[in-house]
Length: 158
Image 1 (cartoon, rainbow, N blue to C red):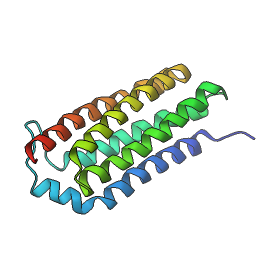
Image 2: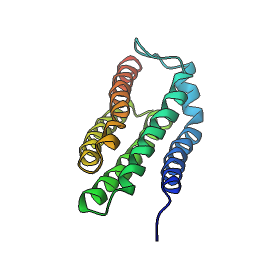
Image 3: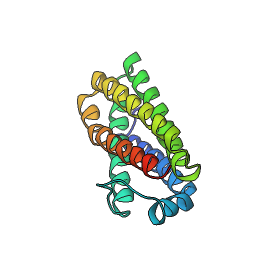
Image 4: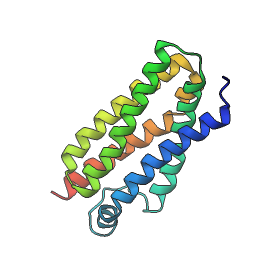
């Protein structure tokens, strides 16, 4: 049975955006607190930047996952998609740790673990589909920037 590529892309985009959307919905009160009350480090972008950036990043992540998913079956492909799922879980949980529970130091440690998982995912994607790996670079850069913001919030709001 032949898979239709557009359905594979749609599946990964819907799945990834749904995870991001659920995290955003669950953390809406904590996000408002962050936006209105918390001291933020220099270089903190305006609040409107975050949802725009994440929609783009989730789309790039999903397109990369779809490309890997469409590759011929191999142990590398399955390992890459496993890491994708794990990092997506870590991504989801970070929002709750940071915005809802306001455990800023623990959230920072979690975010570093997420960043390492993204680098592992990028490496695994590279073995299956180099373009899929390159699509993850903006995500890795953004999460590194998020770590700076997370550290700044932790230090400024002790």
